[in-house]
Length: 329
Image 1 (tube, rainbow, N blue to C red):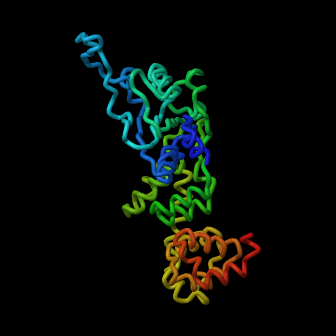
Image 2: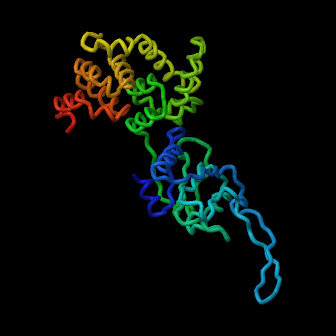
Image 3: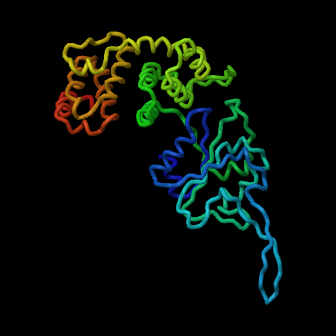
């Protein structure tokens, strides 16, 4: 992964991406994977002098003199020696005023700022929205831009689904995004919409559903989160989702349970059943998957493995894998 390489060589980098795509979350994920601490600094909240810190009077004894000199106390949010390795993450750096960006020059290039030195084992990463997204930004000075490796952040469906399954995102939201992948990220800066679909806003939708809102306000809440068009499609999908057969009933009778015909319904069934996957339920899941169209059967088994990797050690999975080896190659 690009970020891991930059961290390994201590090379500062900048993540560019549309609002809500998960730039900050990706940095946090990489840090967790590498066992590193993250210090998240919102550059837009800083004044140019904040990075330098505050002066204090220190006595020196060079040549026997008790000279007094001004020294600088660096701010508490900068990492200290002995703090271990980590990532100093300057989020929204290009939203900060030019003078604040200028204060970052020496810190990013030379790993020091005045008397302060960035400890060994620490890497500086930054992130921000693109100017074409019509977000609030200041043009990055070329002197600062030339000090960074620039990476464009794009949303990947499978990566997001893996993240969503590990972060308690509602199964209905994941199933809908499977059905309408173009709505995972649908930001058009030309429209100037207040609410639009993005990985971040779908996470908000999941939280709203978990709160079980009154049906009379559900559409308004979701529309205010992902926009009217996406909300209308999602509410229509939810009518199908809420009428699905009980997944426990399907697992009890996998050979006779109803197999839906509509693609939207099959996506929903696969997502619900995959959430039930375990070593004990893998046999009925495989039997039901064998009755689905091939692409949905594969989807059900793949999502089951993501939900519980231990299912790959079951005889049912072995039988399915041997039968579908041409798909797995």
